[in-house]
Length: 381
Ligand code: GLU
Image 1 (cartoon, helix red, strand yellow):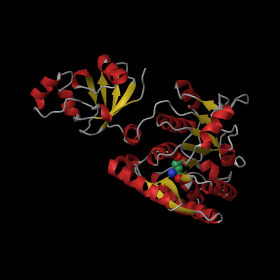
Image 2 (cartoon, helix red, strand yellow; image 1 turned 30 degrees about the horizontal axis):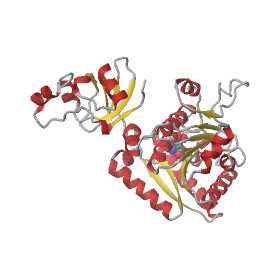
Image 3 (cartoon, protein in one colour; image 1 turned 180 degrees about the vertical axis):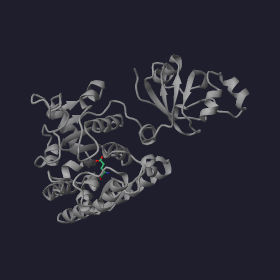
């Protein structure tokens, strides 16, 4: 299929879209919020709304907007300063979205999240209900990390990855990441004039991840690395991502006209369920278990559960119900899952057959270390 045809086919069908807008898009060279950009984005997003699409914005820019307000000349470095900048900047950000969307008779709602808000299944589903209710009222949710209260343990880290989790949360059918770069290049365009934009990525493999490594942003958090991580998480959910330059003309209009702008990351062939996506990517792993080849093959090739007999080693301290990484004997992570035993018990039953586990821990002990319903395969090779 021709490239334009691929784009047309994808963009024609979009009903619900997550648009992540980076700090570098929303600010100018002097570090001030760029109001012309706000107006342009609000206008284009309003057009999508009028066409019947449901939109979630994941907006960065709170810290950038607050930096000037605090009288600082560069992005704050200490955590209290960052949190103070986010607190003052977030209201500025929302004020601008509110007044510019108002011109197009669109309403916005602010949703600030920490990782804790999504890491419990019930809270995750509750957040989904809130967002769907906002859609039903025709309101555009504007999401950001709740930077002014988030400490390391409860942070998402960057808004690129957050936007991937939001794509699952609202079950969107497209993620758009707007940044200050056209997309993914075959070399660093800041250092190499010959660097060429890659229009379509079919599969985010190591080669693609390596291309992204080393790029950095001074205004926001993520460089290209976090964008590729986000696109990968979204592809595994069966959804495409487009990374494009948010300051270039009417970029959102151009995307939906199917023009050859940005880099389009095609969706993966298999689609993880929302719950499995949540297990693998919204939860944070608490430990690692090392699995032998036989058990790995049974999981990867036959979709089986992981039994204690296939366990070779245990790293870290985790409780029953936590997320753990499943790593093969070469150290390669191939799956993640919710473990039925804590780390001490897991260590105790390492390599044991089911009847031996029951003898050691009692007859009601689970047969599986990780049940296949709670196990997500990340790599098949
Ligand atoms: N939440 C941060 C902010 O609003 C930005 C995070 C990011 O750029 O990834 O400033």
